[in-house]
Image 1 (cartoon, one colour):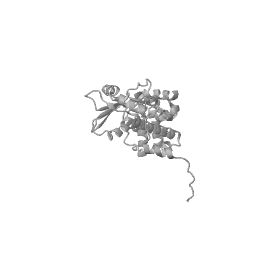
Image 2 (cartoon, rainbow, N blue to C red):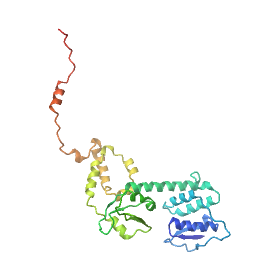
Image 3 (cartoon, rainbow, N blue to C red):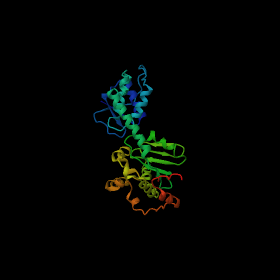
Image 4 (cartoon, rainbow, N blue to C red):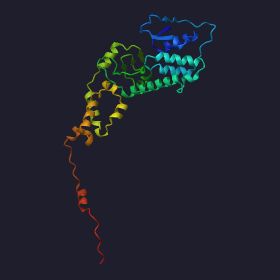
Length: 294
C-alpha cells in the first residue's frame, strides 16, 4: 500500500497523481493523506520522483481537469480517491468514467452539483457587518460552508463591494479583500476569525425591525422556507434567532388573519370620505322609470 502525502490542495494532489500515473500505481493501492493527517504505520510513503525519461508523458483532457478541480472542493473521506480513480480510468481509455451514466462519473457529477449549490448558498446567505476593530477591514462575515468553495466563490463579492475592504472567515479557511487583491488562506488566521465572530452590531436592531415588519405570517410555508433557507445557516444570520419566533407566532394565530400581532394592535388612522363622494354615494340607487314627455 502506498501512502500519497500532499498539502491538501488540488495543485498538490495533481502533482502527486501525475507521479502515480507515471509509475502505473492503481487506485486500490493508494492511501491519500493530507499533510496534517496521521501516517499509516504499515504504509509506504511515496517519495516525489520524476517519471523516467523513457516513459511517455501523461496526457489528461482539459475538460477532465476542470471537472476534477471543481469536484475536489467537495468534503468527504473519499474526496481524493474518487478523483484519482476517474483520472486513472480516463487515462487508460475509459472516457465514460467522467460521464454521469457511469457509477464513478455519477458520483463525480453528484459532488459537482453539491459544490455549485454550496457556492450559491454563500452568495445568498452571507451577511457582512462592520468590523468592530479599527485595525481590521471595513466589513467582516462568518460563514460555515459544507464544502471548500470559499476561494472560488468569494470573488463574487469583490465585484460588488467596490473599494471597501472585507474578509470572510470560516472554521477552515478565510479570504481577505483589501480593495485591490483577494488573499486566500488555507488555514484561517485566528485574528480573522476573532474579527468575524465579534462584529460591530450597533445597526442590527434596525435590520431586525425591518425583517420583522416584512414578514407575512399568512404566506408562511415551513417546508419552502427551510428548503430555500436551510436551518444550518440560521445561527450565523443576524435575523436567524428571529425566524423561529416568527414561525411560532404564525402557528399561534397570526397566520389566520394575515398580519403580525404588533400591526393588529396599532390604532391606525380613520379615513373619512370626501363630501362629493358621500353625496354621490347617497344618491346612488336603482334607476327610476322616466315619466313620459307631456
